[in-house]
Length: 194
Image (tube, rainbow, N blue to C red; front, side, top):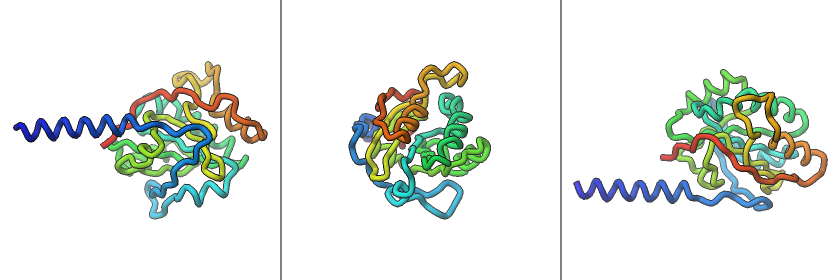
């Protein structure tokens, strides 16, 4: 019995340590990773991919989180608007409670025009300090972090958005400007870690 209690405390402490990982700083080089594309036999190696695009948007997403679901049509429309302009989007599912088949069906149902990958054991989420779904990281072709935060401030009503943060950041970057609002507070469900 005592052993079970001690093991439980250790697991809780490890979970807290993982969830307290510090996020990357703007201007910092982001970690490389290779993840399998959900439902396919191929993988995405970040540093090989980002060189091909003007910027890369990493979106930590969920198949179940109601906040993330509220952004599904926006994720699709924003990606469709910016992919032809040289922006790559990658959806990353790090939730231990959502399996790969669920990730695949979710992407198909929402007609995401970008690849989704499964981050087993939430290693990439831990590397990036990602805590929420949705949570956004924009990288340049050298892997430098240019923006970190939310898509916008209103997951329930797209027509009431006052601060389209992701769109603004991408437009500024594509115009050769620095992002004026480099960090915003991501909100949504916590990433369910192992």
